Image 1 (cartoon, protein in one colour):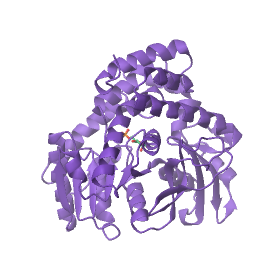
Image 2 (cartoon, protein in one colour):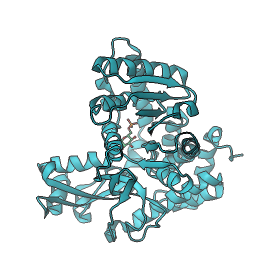
Image 3 (cartoon, protein in one colour):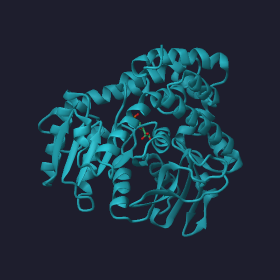
Image 4 (cartoon, protein in one colour):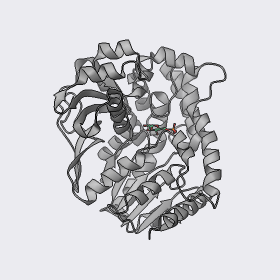
Length: 417
Ligand code: G6P
C-alpha cells in the first residue's frame, strides 16, 4: 500500500506520519511518498519521517519527490496538505478584510474565499492527474477551505475522494466532556457546512439530552451563553465570526494584534528547526500549538473504513444528494456519512432547524458561487459570492474589498488583470 502526502513539506506531515505509525496494524503502508514544490522543506520533512518510522521499528519506506505525477504512480491513498501561497497569502487573507471592517480568517469570510480561489485549480489539477495515473486511488482532502474544495472535487472531477475536517469530532468530544458523558454511550448529531456546523441533538443511552448539552457548554463556548441557550443547538466555534462579528472585528483590529497566520509563522519556524534536528525522531509536542491536531485520526479513520469496507459512521463533507432539505443535491455539506469501499454516503437528515436554516443556505450559496468563480476564473462570480456572504454588509464594502484581495492574489489567479 502506498500513501502520497501532497504537500509533504507541510509542518503537519509529522502528525500524519505519526498516525500512520500508530495505525500500522490496521493500515500497513509499505511506502509513504512526500510530494512538494519546496525542495528544502521536503528534505527536512522526509528526513524526520524516516527517523520517525525507524524509531518505531516499522518497515515503511519514506520517499520524496518534486514530481507530482511520479509520486502518484501506484498510489492507493493521497492526502492533501497544501497551502497555496504559503503563510504570506494567509496573512493577507486575514489582514485585508479587516481594513473594510470585515473579519479576516483563514477559512471563513472573504479570506476563506481567496484561499479557495487559490487552491481549487491546484486540487482539480491533482485530481485530473490522479484519474490518469492512479484511477483507483482515493484522495483524502483536508486542505482548507475543505468544504468548498470538496464541492469543487465532486462537481468538477471524477476523482474518488473524501472531504474531512477534524473539527466535528473535536467539538463533539468537547461537548460530551463538558457534560461529563461517556462517549461510548453517547451520540452527537452534526449538520451544516464545514466550519459552519451545528450539534443539533445529543443522546446518551438513547435518551435525548440536547437541553442538558446546551446548558453544559453555554458558559464555556466561544459563543455567548445567552445566545446559545436561545438558539437551542450548539454551533461550531467558528460561528463566532457570524454571531459575534462586531466584537470579533474589534478584537482583531486592536493595535498590536498578531493574526493567527503571523503566530503560526513563528510556530512553524520553531517547528522546522526541531524537525531538522537529527535527534528529533517523534512528533514534537510543539505541534500541539497548531490547530490541526486530530487530523490524522480523521484521515486514518476514513482510509481504514474504505480499505476494510467497514460501513461505519463518520462526519464528512459530501455532496448533499438529498440528505438535507433545501440544499441543492450537488452542493457539499458536512454531515454524518456511512463510509465503505465505495466512499462516503450521506445519511438522510431532513429539515434543518429554522433558526439556522437561512444562515446555512446563504453561506452555501456563497460557497457554490466561489467554486464557480474559481473554475471559470470569473471576477463577476467572485463578486456575486462575496455579496452573498452574510459577513459582507454591502456593495460599498464588497467591491473595493474584492479589488484589494484580487490584486494581492494576482500571482495565483491568472484571470486577474
Ligand atoms: C482547526 C480547524 C482547521 C484548521 C486549523 C488551523 O483545527 O478545524 O480546519 O486548519 O484549526 O490551525 P492553525 O494552527 O493553522 O491556525
